[in-house]
Length: 137
Image 1: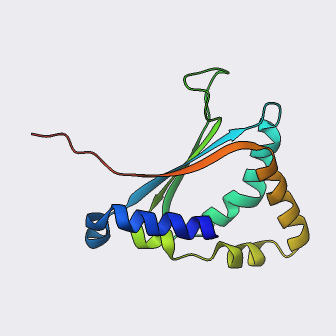
Image 2: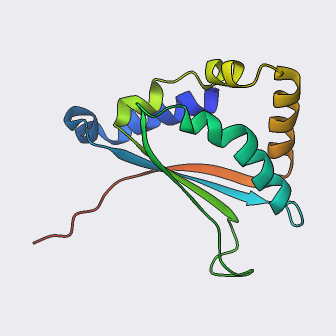
């Protein structure tokens, strides 16, 4: 949650025009999963995290989930990518995912253990707020 709030503050500082104009914004969430654990990570992501994202239809316009088609395709610094389009910059900061998780997953002990495991099998994870670039005329 602290990382999420820090990202929201950073996004607010970096994009004042998007805040003022209430434009949709995107964040790319990159994951590099340890070798041999890709399927386990995906199973846990789709079981525990995607339902939390899907529950936020008023804030999140869409979620795209991608992975390289072939082993060794392009750069090897990520193996799973989630790109979320938020309604606006404020939507990024105005969520309590822990409350949603408590409502969706009454067995919090299992949920927390599985989420801990999902992050244990990562080598790296980073969030990148994206800005649309308009080419000059």
